[in-house]
Every structure is written in C-alpha cells, then in structure tokens.
Length: 132
Image (cartoon, one colour):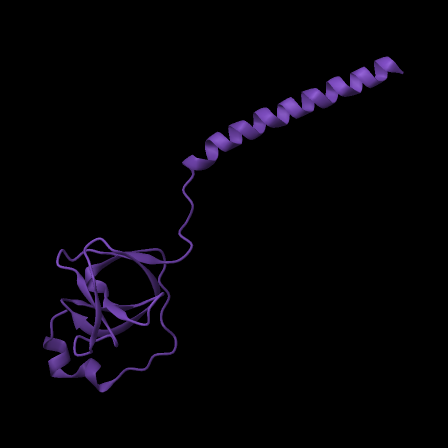
C-alpha cells in the first residue's frame, strides 16, 4: 500500500512539474503576440492639430482642438464635406464631435454611421471650397 501511494505521489509531482514547465513556456510566448485593437482608433497627423466640430463640415462650430499625435477612439465614419480630397469624417467615440479623416491616421475597421442624413451644406459651393 505504501509503495502504491508513493508511486501516485511521484506521478502527481511529475504532472505538476510538467504543467508548470508548459505554463511557463506559454507565458513567455504570450507577450510577443499582438492583440487586435478592441475598437477603431486614430492618431492626429496634422502638425498644427485639428478642430473637433459639431457637424462634419468646416462651416460647423469648433468644439475643441486635438493636438498632433493625439490618440482618439472612433465611433463611425460618414461621407460629408470634402477636405483636401478626402470626404470622410469621423465621429469620436467619447465625445459627440467630428474630425476630418484627412488629418487622422486610422487603425482598425471604422464602421459607417447608420443614422445620419445629408444636409444642403454637403453639396454647397462654399462647402466644397472650404478648408479643414
């Protein structure tokens, strides 16, 4: 009986050591693997920063300014006023403000905004000529 118990203890000890060794090697590998972004985000690429606006047009009121290299979470994107060849605008996740995609380097898949309607400003001559 004693020998059977000793054999079981040795087997259990060997199993614990094997699991510990395997777990240690898995932990060493885990940090090297990159995790996909949880949500889309962007970084401001305009050296002078960009304006946060109430609506996706340069005619809209400025609600704030984001500095160069600021990281921002993006809720969705919409086609609106063209700014220097780019008609996409991003709605920010934490704030209900818009930024021109022309000055944001995005990472991850930014979904289309589903509940927006186009306004007369989108197609006006003034809107097409306006700058960011």
